[in-house]
Image (cartoon, rainbow, N blue to C red; front, side):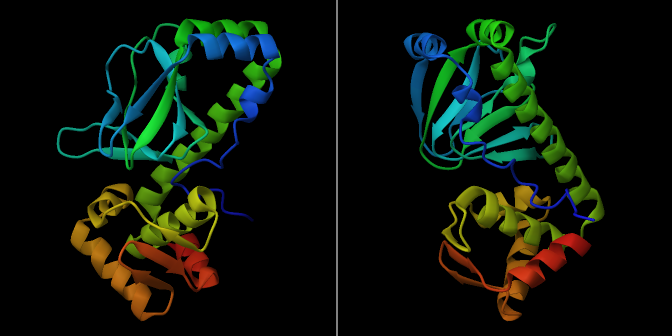
Length: 230
């Protein structure tokens, strides 16, 4: 049986399919009311507990969504371009961001007024269904994150993240990784020293090659096995 709790760093990129369900008039309404902002690497896009007046669409860049804790943060997902952030704010009775989001690299976002977004959900059932599917995919991905943290050892956690970056973020076995070792540690729930040690194990075993920020996954089959068995 396929393990649905592998590749847990992000949902599969839906390539804006939800916006394809909008009419020309509805898209024009969004275009005329959206606000475009740019963020430098490391800047906060949304703050947990702050007032949610907009749904956030990541147009360019790479971001992380995380829950803030007293001692450390819990990363829920890496968000590539073409994805929405802030959708949990849509339900009645909530008007604040339930998580924070910040950038891994220089990024560009579009802010869509949350009342306009709700209006479109009410009047366009196909658009609403596409957003529901997006939320469902996000839920499964979040379940996978917790499964990874609670059932996988260090090698399994890092293999899972490297495969997810390769398959879901960059779509290539070779990619330039903007995340630091400390970022990977936060993402995998490990110490920075443990990430460095496991990365060395993967290199020594011929599973990956690294050259500065460049990473190439060599033995995909073995990385998949390590990710699956934890």
